[in-house]
Structure formats: structure tokens, C-alpha cells
Length: 406
Image (tube, rainbow, N blue to C red; front, side, top):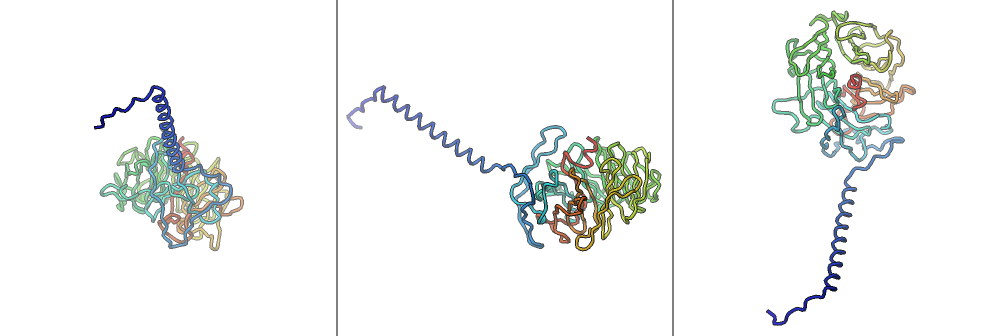
């Protein structure tokens, strides 16, 4: 140890050091906060620009495998009936060249039948949600051939009918889990917990399910969580057009704004308005179609349907059967067994052109296709491809069946 003592600093010098130390601490903290802000701003998604024209698209050539980031988890809803908030996805979309994403009011639900999956994409064709992902299905569960898919009235679930596998599913959007099934996969029947080729399904605010049990030629209601029907219209196995006593291949049940339902019967191309108590307001044979399918109310005395054949067509009509608009393109734009049509808020129509493996939006004023997702005639499961898409629904608050019950 040194024998010399260090002289103690003066009070003035100590004050000077404290001031310098304070400046250094302030500078370090300021630099840290500035760096954090820059990193956060760089990682946060920016507000997408307004769609004022056509979209930029990856649009890989047929057969090319594309990659995409894992779908992020959905956020919890902010109110009881608010839709699940799906996180935004950045980057170009997967639409056909020339597509205009501004024609859609928001995301879109797709039942990709032969792809055995549900998708939610945004207007630019970017994946927001998918079911099932690896790990979504519990041991012993399967998910096959979704035919029709609608959002529930509370916007939290998706209700699905599989015509080919004779089973119904209810899927929770937030947890990616099957929370209810009715029917046994690939085991059609007419007893408790059995259906036979259910050709659609809608969920009531009570969570009861109403569906056309096409193979059994009946319209049935299943109470929430139940494993047996609570109401039946038509006689099981009696296939003849005479509602409500009997139905011939019921191929659609859709809720109306007045509380009744639009009933579609495939054989004979009949459409009827009927209450669940069985009161029939009108029935009409729609002219010029062969295999009518999934008729929906789109406005006061206006209905839209598809002709599920090749070449197919889309048409709107009134309760007398008078056709208001018909879309029946030919050549390389011919529809191949279209399975559903839904109106968009701007007056356009979205069509699931099933066997052509695409969804299209048609402007009825010009009959031009203004939006397309999927490669015409080319099935696939990577981004931008579909495989026999059948059911479609708009994301809440624009969901078709759900908004009728609001």
C-alpha cells in the first residue's frame, strides 16, 4: 500500500462530476429508447395503401411450389359479438393478374373441398387463417371434404357441412379446434347422430343447426350440442317435391331477412320460401337451369343461385321465377359446376367455380371477371391454388348467413 493519501475532491469538483454523470445517464437512456422505438416501428406492419387499381401478385406458374410464413394466431375479440381480429399479413398477394382487391369488403372464408381445409384470405389473396394446421386435430379426429362453411351468428365459429362424408363440424376460430360434430365420418344414416349427404348448414343464434339432409330428403334442426334432431320437415326417404310434406333432393337452406328460409330442391329446380314451422309462402321452378344449388336471398324479392353443371351459370330472379340477370360464359371462361354465389356490397357477385379450382368476382354490369383467386383448371394446395372450392362466406360483419340473424 502506498504511504501517500489521495487528496479529497473539493465540493465544487464533486458537483461538477455529478452534473457530468447525469448528462451521461440521460444520453445513454435516450439512445436506448430511440433504438427501441426504431426497432418497434420497423417490425410493426404499416397501414396498407388504399387499393386504387390492380394488385401486385406473386401468381406462381402452375405446378410451382410456393412458400409462405406460418399463419399467426388470431387475437381475442374485443366484444361479445365482435369478429376475431386476424393479424395483417404484408407482402404481395396471390391473385390472378388484373385482379382488383378493392371489390371485396374484407377477408373471405373458403371451404376447399378436395383440399380438406378451410382458408381465410384477405382481399389480396394472402393467407390469414387455415384449418387444420399440424396439431389442430385431436387424436382420432379427421376433417374431410368441407362442402359449405358459414360463420356463426356470434362471429366466433365456423359451421361446416361435408356432403361427401356425411358429417357436420363446428370449429372455433380462435383455438383452431373442432368443438362439436354431428354425424359419423363416411357413415351416412337417418338415426340419432346421423345424416346422409347434408347439402349445407346454418347456425341459429341459439347455436342450433338447420340443414338440408339431402340423402334423406328432409329439412332438420339439431339443438345446440345435441346428438338427435329436434324438428323435421319432410318424411325420411320420401323424395318428392311437395313441401313441407316432402322434398326432392334439398340442396340448400338459407335464412331470409323476414325469419323464413329459402329452400332449394335440386331435382326439378324448385325454390321455395318456408318457415321452420312448415308454412310455405311460395314455390317456383326457376327456368333455364339443370341442377340448381344453394339459393340465397340477396335483397327484397331477389334471389341468386347457380346451375351446378358444365357449362354452368349464375342467375338472379324474383319469387315468380322471372330471371333478372344470367351469367353463362362460354369458351375458356365457361363455368365448370359452380357451387355457390354470394353478393358483394358493391353489387358484384362472388362465385365458387368449383371444378375450375377458382373463385371469381363478376361485375354484373359488364359481365367481366374483376377478381380471381386460384388457377383456372389447376388444383393445388400452396398459396394461390385451390382444389374444388365449394363454400364461400364474407368475413364478419359482412358474413352472409350470420348477418341475417343480427
